[in-house]
Length: 305
Image (cartoon, rainbow, N blue to C red; front, side):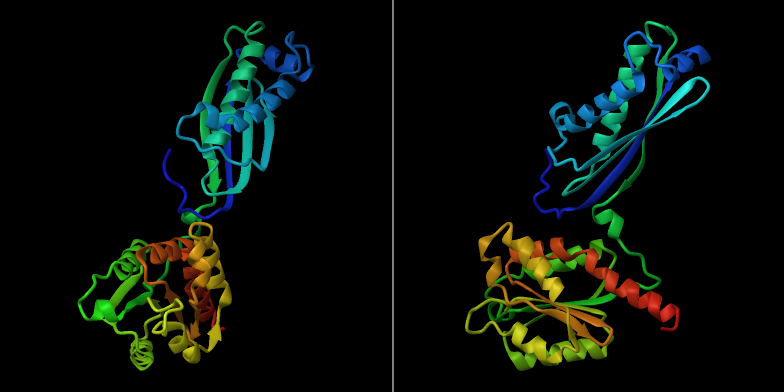
């Protein structure tokens, strides 16, 4: 199975459908009147669909076991067909599309098995996904203009050339993957005045997103949060709460990060750990969701608010 340990749990929903086609209206009438010898077709198929959804991971090799928190089965009966619709929902790290389609297909097969003694022409058609929701793809924003961003590496050793930067490049690559315009990538030493001066220059250049990596821990020269806090017009504590919680589930030292995030005018500043693992986890936890800030601003500006 593919690795989903880096993913965040979000609300996931999928709706799948299948059609069972009879060869005559008499078959459908027999279903409606509960006259099929093998029993109540609709109820048996509903129960089978529930089992099908739950057992998907046991039968489809690459599907992950997951907590299925909702399954519903609905029908529409036509003159010579039955449309099956299965909805599955959960809060988890991966989607439920296959679960919904598996449930629909098992319901259809159950109907086929129960109807074949009275209808030799019964068939199954169009097993398909109707709708899916959840995961990062559902939260990816589009903007009239790309968000202009800067990535700043705060490190004495990297600025002196004694160590290679990895965290900053990870952040930059992630931002580009979300169509963010990274115009500045810079490396500066651990120094409060230099950090503040650099950030103020970037704000003057109208960078809407500024991410600093490094200097968020408990070492004597971890100054980044102390440099950034006085510049903020409004702290947004939820951003770092999410990042730390995400990290804590993967590394018990994440609680030691002092990272801060907040707004300066219409610009967002985020401070992240300097380790490559900490930077990657912070980006996985926050993006693309945090870009919604700029979507809200864009819509407010368009409506003159």
